[in-house]
Length: 118
Image (cartoon, rainbow, N blue to C red; front, top):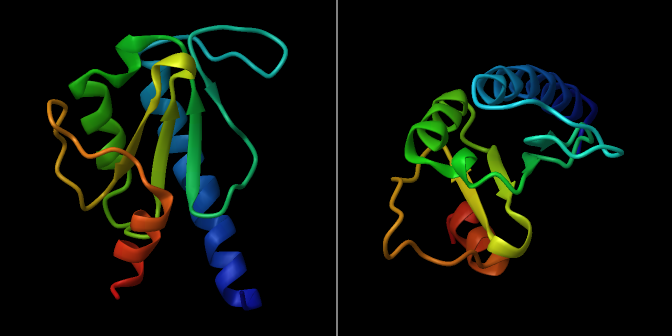
């Protein structure tokens, strides 16, 4: 990744982190790696992914997911992963419709293939 692209990615990461955090604070209390609260918004730059860890199923209700999806408008390369421990998880992208019943399972290979446009 070129220096300019890395700087842009890091800038976008920081902006999105704050926006995601603002949405989540409406629905619960943040924790950190040492304590369990309602959610943990991972503060490591994982590339074009933000990760939320939670056991609180309320954080995957449609209004929360839609609010998080709105954060991604204008950031087509980004996604938000909500990891629900033993329950599985949800992946949110700007350009995907939100469905719960009958939604497709997460497959990293297919996801990468769709994103590459091949």
